[in-house]
Amino acid sequence: MQGILEGPFGTLIFFVPVIILFYFMLIRPQQKQMKRHRDMVAALKRGDTVVLSNGMIGKVTRVENDESMVEISQGVNVRVVKAMITEVRDRTAIAANDAKA
Image (cartoon, rainbow, N blue to C red; front, side):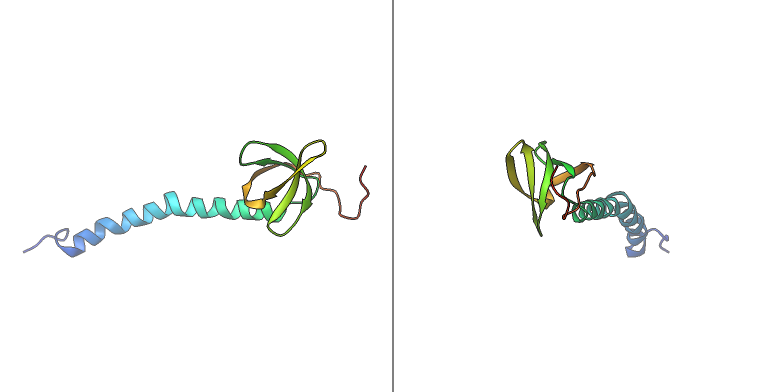
C-alpha cells in the first residue's frame, strides 16, 4: 500500500503551494509596480519635475503620445521616451492654455 505523499499526487501536493507562493512573492508585486508606473506616465503633464532612468532631473515642457520633451538645463530640451521616466518628483503642472511666466 502506497502512502499519500508517494506517486504523482504527492508531487502535485508539493508543487501547488510552491507555485502559489511564487505568484504572491514575485509575479503579483511586479504586476502592481508595472501598473503604478503606467499610471504615473499616463498622468504626466507639462511642468512636472521628473527623474529619468539615467539619473537626469528635468522639467516636462511638452507631452506627446509616447514621448515627452524634458528641459534638463535652461534652453536645453531633450526628447524622452515616456517609459524611461522613473519618478515624478514635483507635480506643479501648468495648464496648456496658460501663458509662460
